Image (cartoon, rainbow, N blue to C red; front, side, top):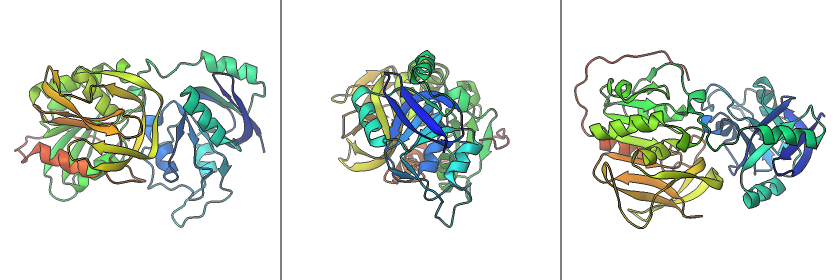
Amino acid sequence: MTPALLVLEDGRTFRGEAYGAVGETVGEAVFATGMTGYQETLTDPSYHRQVVVMTAPHVGNTGVNAEDRESARVQVAGYVVRDPARVPSSWRATGSLQDELAGAGVVGVSGVDTRALTRHLRERGAMRVGLSSVEDDPAALLDRVRAAPGMLGADLAHEVSTPEPYVVAAVGPTRRRVAALDLGIKRMTPELLARRGIETHVLPAWSTADELLALDPDGVFVSNGPGDPGATAGPVQAVRRVLAEGVPVFGICFGNQILGRALGFGTYKLRYGHRGLNQPVRDNATGRVEVTAHNHGFAVDAPTDRVSETEFGRAEVSHVNLNDGVVEGLRCLDRPAFGVQYHPEAAAGPHDAAHLFDRFLDLMGTRRPHGPAATGGRDA
């Protein structure tokens, strides 16, 4: 096996073996707590420029397949596992995770004490990291890690967005039309909308409010995605205009942060973020606790103890994380708009929050007559 090196920006070093492509990569080190759904994690555009450390010790046993991808390619900057499966064991597998990573050119490291690495990141916070199977000198790799850009101030949505608009047709009769702003959208999102009779027009991250509204949509969806919401100006301006027009808005994850900024709230970077499939979130309106899928390193800075006055009327925090009290959802009281910080479309589960797509459908009300709308080819 080819030796590999992992060096964090604070100098902590781990050694292991190459897993996936042989080479070198630098990104933000984050840990994901899911015991299943690693293929959805790898192909989630929200993980762009991040090196994912899997807390589950054994990874790769179900292999990979074409159906479980959330985008057209592996999105992570690097991958760290403790015990990779030697062979896949699933009737759905069409290949191994090792070969998938190698084919995508994604550098990984195996044989690492991921428990110790995760504890370090929890104590010190998410930080830059370098993985290399071509460099044996930790000091040399550390220099390159510290010279790499961090996540603060990173405007990344345009790097993962679709280059051209495309349409996902409704399943059965079309009940609504939605304009989706693709900041790193996952394929399961328009699929779940389609199952509810919603025709989804997916537009690039740099689309303007005029382009969104030109579709005469019943609602606007703002997707998940990577980067610092504080450095992402265009989508904020687009959402502000949509709110002013009174068109229903639903944002998830990064889209919730964009909605928050459009309402006038700030955002901030979490110490190590929420990533995985088991985050408990309370709906403040009902008291119901849902187990949810997450991937966010930033959060909205909004008061949880009162209703806020914004340019677009009253708004409140609708959901909170029960582990740390972080804002997990926003709701406008005088506009048809809401957002959640987690992933209700979670393909690998849990599915506690899938009902939010029904809520969006209800928010859009009765379908109005529409004129012709432009369509495009599928390119996700």
